Amino acid sequence: MKKGNLAPNLKLSLPPPDEVALSKFLTESGTFKDGDLLVNRDGVRVVSQNQVEAPSLIRPSDNQLSLADFDAVKVIGKGNGGIVRLVQHKWTGQFFALKVIQMNIEESARRHIAQELKINQSSQCPYVVVCYQSFYDNGAISIILEYMDGGSLADFLKKVRTIPEPYLAAICKQVLKGLWYLHHEKHIIHRDLKPSNLLVNHRGEVKITDFGVSAILASTSGLANTFVGTYNYMSPERIVGSTYGYRSDIWSLGLVLLECATGQFPYSPPQPGEGWINVYELMETIVDHPAPRAPSDLFSPEFCSFISACIQKDPKDRLSANELMTHPFLSKFGDLDIDLAPYFTSAGPPLATL
Ligand code: ATP
Ligand code: MG
Image 1 (cartoon, rainbow, N blue to C red):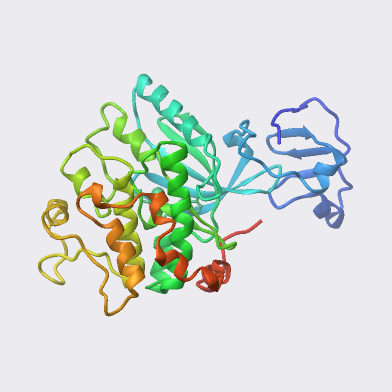
Image 2 (cartoon, helix red, strand yellow; image 1 turned 45 degrees about the vertical axis):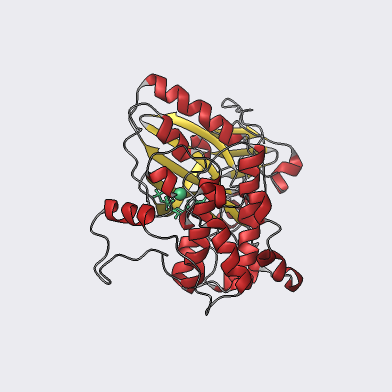
């Protein structure tokens, strides 16, 4: 939908002032409809008649959104870098997630970030969360994202504790397709693959998000040493500061899957029950200790083999996203036609659905 067509001087014939009639014209987002006019507190928009009946949905190519076009509904998540809100587009009623990352940075870094975010916006893949538009305003980057009403895999895992192999294979297939797209089509290393960056929805879809965000933060001058995310899923070669590539994401994928299967992060602190003393102790363990494996008495040989194809300390020993797609763990459950939609919704109703 194109923004614009604002006609502030148009005279409106508003609906009759009795309440029943009025309610017919007032949409949930506080927008009045009158003939081919939409009006709310931010202005008047002329739309075609069929748009009034059923406003067309916003597509990623409609890059003319502005923050003033959205109503905030509620806060849906908080990360280290910022806050994520469910917002609703005033004119179409469509839901989005608005992520605001607070950062006070200089002009050159800002331009760099704007450029990187454009790359994000150009991504079009059903296994990657759509980034519709991003803004830099008053020391904060705001990103309008596709809203995923099931939340993250981290949220889901808290509810179900563990994910059985057949569902895990179906989830893994989608994540691999997303990774394949990022690696082979966009030539992007995600760098921050973890359960909270895999989002799910009531349609049973799993999508990768926040790719490129960590790259932007890492490559922005003055911010290189201010990584505030988690080191849990970071590959050994990244921890020691060697060069790293796409297979760094495959290490993270292996850890995520193993955590989903067992219900526990694969590394445990040396003193059980005491927790990690600091982040360096965890990093040392990842670098110095043998790579974790899936316990063969609890899981199928195919799953164990898939995990060890991902979690190899030497990146050369890991398989690529493309190679993993033909792994027997994924074909093993292929015939079952696993539907993730009821599985995801069984853990709780979606927050808001259009
Ligand atoms: P970190 O800041 O350490 O990377 P994080 O990934 O949890 O952690 P955010 O990316 O800010 O931080 O996301 C916070 C939470 O907001 C997520 O865990 C998820 O529950 C929710 N969230 C993020 N993006 C969306 C989205 N597009 N749709 C629905 N929920 C989302
Ligand atoms: Mg995130």
